[in-house]
Length: 505
Image 1 (cartoon, rainbow, N blue to C red):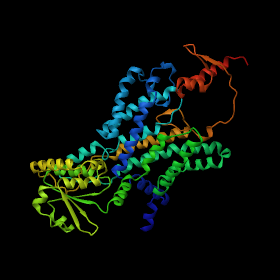
Image 2 (image 1 turned 90 degrees about the vertical axis):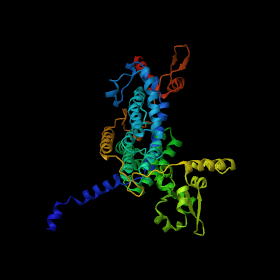
Image 3 (image 1 turned 180 degrees about the vertical axis):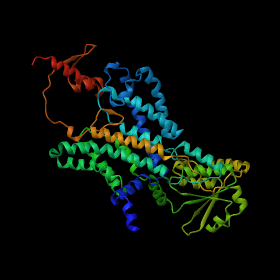
Image 4 (image 1 turned 90 degrees about the horizontal axis):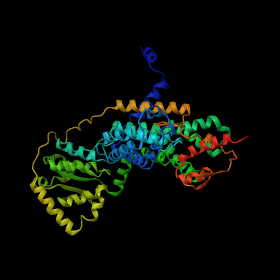
């Protein structure tokens, strides 16, 4: 029997590889980590929409547009013009801004990504390759399929507000729904680096210096390095060094790719460590669990508790807080005011209530730190206590549909759309990279180190007479300075080549 079972098992190496892949992809992650990536991605996308010459290129005659591979098959059948871009560009900017701040996050993300595919695709039709935003759009598409708005967003505050009405006053737990999009984004970055390094090694390894060879090994190693956390951190650190070096020694610079490195940082753990360094232990907040306003306030405070320094306790759960040593607090006082309890260095409890409790809570919530400049001023504190007293005395009791001790309700989300979209993106990256397709959108094989040509060439020297009669030296630098955009260089180059063909040999 054991031998028959063993014969039916898959190969050990394949099974181990499958388990490793499964653990990598489906490791739980923090909502805050995914939210930080969302903010960076859509900020970068917003800057691209604002700075790329979309309207300028849309005004070109259609015959002058050079369609990029992949997206060109779609773009050449779509209308392109200044009138359309003048209408769509503000919509794309607004949608990207909404996705950035996390308002209607899922819908705004899809609108931003789809319009960016079209509008930034127009900018790719100039004839010059621009690799600044390919990976940004790809990762943005992954975020549009995920729950990237469950932290650092207006949506998360509204969700906490609604959950409190049902008695759910809890943090958003670590989950695969937050880890999976980040892991897929890591693979996008890994493949982005891999193929330039691979083709450099294949075509020009013998001519590479020792420094370039180390850079090639680093680029090729990305797809394996991302599988394990220690190697991910090492490769990301080497990436910072690589980009800093190329910035100093050459014109090669990829700030938008470097910005994606935020995905390699465990921001929730980092903030948690910071909170434990700043404060001895979390502050215990006792609130009236039968008060809708109290539940809503507590729920939203937990959403903003990035330092993990708030420990909420329902004041109706006397057994729980009595076991903590807070049994001396009277029920009437707990029902009348919110209480904040902190341990002193002597391990004794120090409690504050009402507006004073909110002052203590503000120290633990980074978003409320600016208020510390004013809430302790006597006039502000006096007014705050009066307002708190009025609101607290006039609030109504509202028994929740479900008590906050109940399990957290399942957040509606399916991994299937994200996995399908992620598989399509990664397959497209592999196909394009294996084919060395450089001028394509929104997937491309980024520039190779082996394509750098250091040979010299003699160019004819001529002057160009512009329409207004000005004379400019017939050279790339002079004309580029005049037109203020390097994308014109491909057009100028074409004219120069045609002009050169007409000269007698």
